[in-house]
Image (cartoon, rainbow, N blue to C red; front, side, top):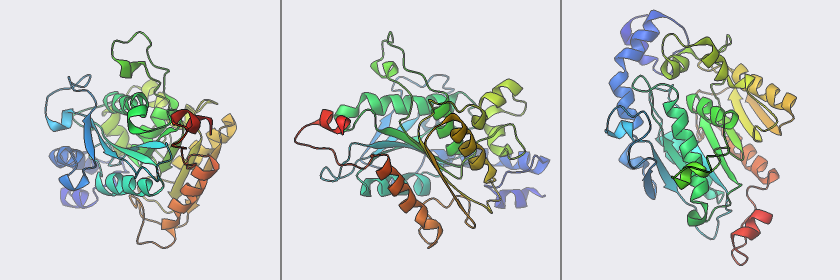
Length: 326
């Protein structure tokens, strides 16, 4: 495959070929630029997660500063639930519009607050940088729940493609926080209360591995133990949060078996889970608003969130604690 053809197939990256590696290198600067998002993607407020610098930051440019773009629903619709959104992009760039801004606006129609995460990506960064960013985002939203009118135990995470790998990593590698930390944000739990995955990268060790995402996250010669630890279908426990997944059977970029493996692991661990496999659909579809069939995944998600009681309106007359009891 020529370099030109590899550029055209920007989100494919599924074969461990020399052309794929050339593609990754050639698109280094375009990936860095995409990770910054765009002015059109701005929500109501952009929060820098580490004002004094992210751990392991290699510079002080925009790409070195993880942020949350805040989208709050109208107060009369607010349910108290919130979701951190992890856009996809093969851990080399971020789709901050279709898998970020537009998803956040859709969640707002349900009364759910949304926080679009701009996390660090390769090849400038490898694990654990992006994982630290996701954990920090969850801790931040939970710590600031009162300020945003949120219920602290109704804060979830959603991810698409490689962002799905990041979200599933956050849901299988969490901690209760450090009570002795000087920073109050670091005292909060990083465990998401629910997990939503769209055509996610899950496995880093199986034949279904999306090799481009693994390369960007872990580098060219990852430690086998680290790759296994981040093969998230192997890390599910009874403490993994309830999960909703959707995928497309004909996905040529990230095979649907990634979702199936994770779903089977959830069932085995006794974790409430729901999986939808569509026969056809384009990888990176996000809301799939132009596809009358695939776009129904958002209706299925809304139903699932109702079942999980995540869309039950908070009672403003009785305050936040009433919402928690409900």
